[in-house]
Length: 428
Image 1 (cartoon, rainbow, N blue to C red):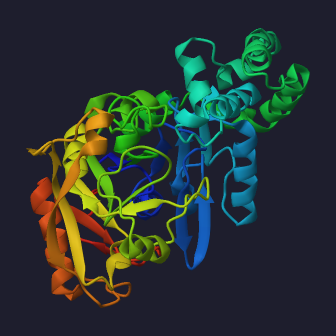
Image 2 (image 1 turned 60 degrees about the vertical axis):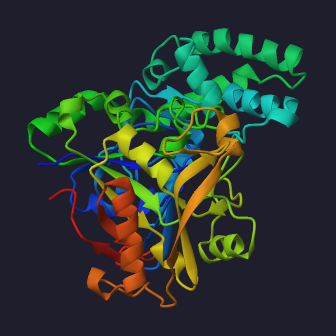
Image 3 (image 1 turned 45 degrees about the vertical axis):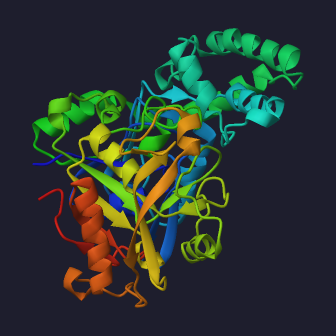
């Protein structure tokens, strides 16, 4: 029985939600292992749109879903999401959704710190979503974090007061921002505790139990490889490890339990927020892709920057994640363009680079080396067979496979679950 990790290969927003929803049909459990509500996964089922930020996408398929210890959770957002999905007829009861007792809580002072820092550093903003993700991970590393297990303990109030005193000092004295009302935090989180306590368990132990029963587990990542805190375009990254290896740390399983890693790649490249973007388009083609692809962040609503596909990035993702295959999304968006470009390398000071540079200064000065290919006019959103795709579309896919030495296993030609061509099911 296969256990699969799904990760993004670019800067997030690759369409992981749809692919997780699709593959959840073949799995028994779906586990989210990092990030928080700075992620947004969109699924379209029978024409109805579902957006999740914390609850794993597999919940739409009726699978048992788990929030791993590697996540940071805003309990108010989670409760609202549970209610939203419930209103849409989705079962999100404690038997269906499990929360790791080791997952950390995003507190109001985390969000206050997030906003205060961005406001104080207008010239060096990193484009945070302002949801307290980074400050929460900071406290986790500084051993000042509060976990779900701590929320359930008797010492919760004392713990909050100790940490909040320090945060309020920073907020008022350094940032000249309003303090957080500590008693209000304690009262609010006591209500959240009452609501969420039935969901809390040791997710790592539970995963081990189901793996012993030869059940299939799908590990769902958020954001993308190049937003990884270690391997991304630092500091314009998220605050967690987004690469496949973190599925083990963020869910509490050993690496021998992972069988396959599927990388989600958008048929072009997008990015939200700041940071270098070598293949970014500033012309009518970029506008065409942005408008046709409806490229707005599911979490922030921000317009996404758009550009040509970048196989330097993809090769980097293949290496970092040990990818066993690609799922190519939004291929239909490129229909109507006469010519397509694929970035095959970078030029930096008259030298061609084949590997993704670490230095942001170097990356910002890189010029993409392009290979041009004919586009296609046809609307491929109704195509359900690889052989029925236009020849130019198949050539485009083959060239990406050649340049990355990785096969396309799944091809998405629209947002609907049925708008998919499955060439090789990762679950077998």
